[in-house]
Length: 363
Image 1 (spheres, one colour):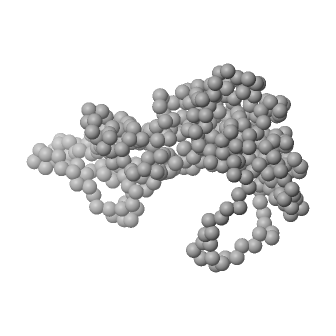
Image 2: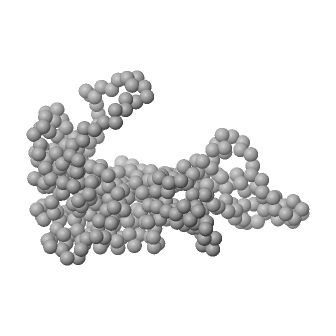
């Protein structure tokens, strides 16, 4: 009996996305014209192969990122509880005054606890934003958006659809315009106002900007404990708050002291909501994309694949990096094992020995 798989175990299974992925895989042609067969002759054989394989890879990677986000969230909950429990008794009452003294770490894990907690916050944010950028690649491929699929960016794709006019001239443009309306509707439906902009700005702050000052507070633990003489024993729970406007700097935020600079909820609550909203959006978008994919297959000439999706042609560029221990292990690719899906992708990309020479003749 097959196991449910990591996505189901972590509650990030998305059956409609899996259905779309299966449809894309089934349409990969392992012989001429290669790539997504019904795209031919557009946008040329070499570009069709490159775009087709990247479309499959992007779609598959949406789930990979969501699984990673869920794992980070699971670990974040554990380390949040550990850190909070460790700090539970850091408050004491001396002569009627509260005194705060953080306990000394007893082992390397306690020494690293707060750093591990931060790592998982970053991990959730990076992974959910990665899922959206991969979803952008899927949108580019399925909807025939004239943007580079290899460097897909969800915000850029969204801006493209916002610029579409309602004055459509063809059935293909009507399909694109309809999807644009659905996308905004699905974004609004998936979470509170501004959730998507906050998610992308938070990821950008963590990955590309200077980190914001971290703010949190001590909350009284319930139930209250009392000592032998009836005196209350203060015990606390640590609550971490994430920035309300992560796209702004600390100085920009702190110059407005009357405005609350953080979200009035625990970071764990924010990130759980973020994962749920992202999953909801992906589910809805996958359903809309599957509908477009089936329509395009039945009407292949109504919406052709644009060359702008791979603007620089076949790349042979190399960084020239040899590694830090070049030659330490010899890699021999003469014999290997792989998954049947990868074998199909290689066939559809004309990468087997008997077909690779055709690349010199591709348009």
